[in-house]
Amino acid sequence: MLLELALDALPTEPLPLREDLGLNPELIYLGAAPSHNWAKNKAFTRAASIVETNTPYGRALDFSSAASAGLTSSGGTTAAQTRCTFIVVYRRNASNAYASIANLGGKWSIGFESSGVGLALVKNGIVALTSITPNPAADVLFACSHDTATGEYWSESLDLNGANNGFIDFVTQTDTNAQSAGDGSITVNANGGANTLGGYISAVIGAHQFLPYQRWRNIRQGPQLALFEPDRIWVPVAAINSYSLTADQGSFTLTGQAAGLTAARTMAAAQGSFALTGQDAGLLFGHLLTAGQGSYSLTGQDASLTATRLLTAAQGSFSLTGQDAGLYVSRALSAGQGSYALSGQDATLTYSPAGAYTITADAGSFTLTGQADGLSAARLLTAAQGSYSLTGQDASLLYGVGYTLTADAGAFSLTGQAAELRRMVVMTASHGVFTLTGRSASLDYSGAGIVRYSAPPLGHGPGLSQRISGTLGRRGANLSTRKR
Image 1 (cartoon, rainbow, N blue to C red):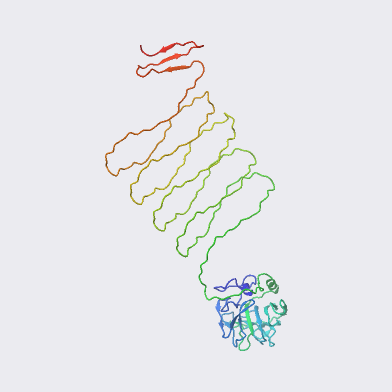
Image 2: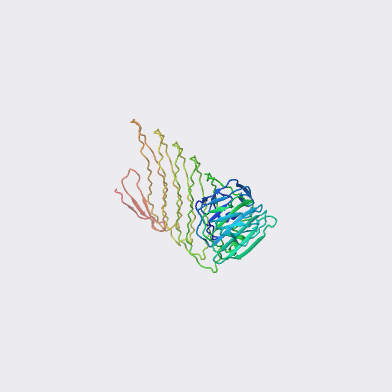
């Protein structure tokens, strides 16, 4: 509608029209909000007997029963002006001689001739330029513009409905007569007594600039001027109320187009990053909320290698952060154990023939941390033993003959916490036991010259005999170190 062209929303301070028109108006009247001249954000003085009505193009003021002036205001331009433009949407139900639809400064206006049917721009309050006769009983869009310096004048009417819906009437004229100074008044349908419009006015724009006809024609035919939207009703409100809005989550899909490479080249793949941000939601009331876990999935695309090469595999890491949850009330909570699984991928060795490469296996470690659990009250606790199982993997020897392995002892440290006795009582100390297990070590030598050792039985003096095996089954010499 025309009022949509004039304003995106009702202003709180004087605003120019949108750039589509290129005007800085003196007058903006809207039938949906007729209390003010929105070009200057100044209140109108409204005459009695004027009623509001619904029209096919929104709300309007009906002046049919008004016997006196319509809407009046002051504070307009008083200096003599050389240019003027009016745009109005109205409906005339009767012939009203000399009725004035709108007025700027008491010198520029659009009004009806003595016949009450011809509409034209009026200069100095008395001289009317060439008029147009729009069809009665129809909503009409009327526009005109004049430049006294060049003499150019045009006016146009468009029937928005009725028997001649869509009919356009257009006239031009050359007039260089100057306009005199004004009194600063701004009015809508105010000419005194019976010389008021017998109908309603939906919207008026008045400005002291010239609007070329070609620009107006482009605007009228373009989508900016939504004149054919009969189902919208504008309702004025006295004040802005506060309401609560329920905010639902939204989503978006980011799409694109695969870029085809004109030639196959090797490209270095660098990691990327993204930041997910939002806005804190202020709660209208303080209530208990149940916090549930969330999740996200990070996916990518497999990178195909153009050639088989050795790659050095480095470990990666990620940090999972969150926000401490404050408890609304202090309560005793049952602490249950948690678990996590650390998984990876088997590393395949490039070469597998025996003796090709040697890999040194180092020990690994991980640190499991937590938070000390404070007891809410001092109580006697029964301490029960615990256990753990240390597992590993059998190491296969690459060669079974001809090599010597030195077996070193291993050790582990079992630590705990000293148990304090609540009372000093005599306790009987019983012995404890432990079992140390191992594996028999078999010596395996083959070939000539085997050395055999024999140990004396218990209770005899120290001694050690050594016999060297003979060759070809003969008994070897017996050498004894024991005293006789």
